[in-house]
Length: 148
Image (cartoon, rainbow, N blue to C red; front, side, top):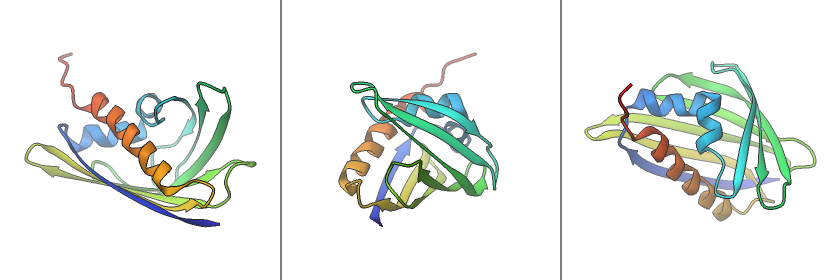
């Protein structure tokens, strides 16, 4: 049963194209997406509309992991991503839909995240906290401008 929705909003000091790349490049995703205490392995990522992805998060303390994957429903570089997420069995049941919107603003990029259909087994506030932690890592990845 899916019941939860979380919404997040951030302003990042980086161009929208750079932020978008962080969502669709496997090495970038594995660096910022897992919340505190987790590692991430991206096994497949076809960065295009209709493309699929598969990854897993591993709890660094316990060593337990959970795998999930999905399909890109919308893919507009530098502007919008919409994708599904489904956990592998025996994980939580249901399909989540995540929408990422990016908009250039005077100091960088406005980022809006909406994740819907969060399984009842995952408290929405825990999911929200995880996203907040992940977005801290995202900012640390995309905001520095390091010359070549």
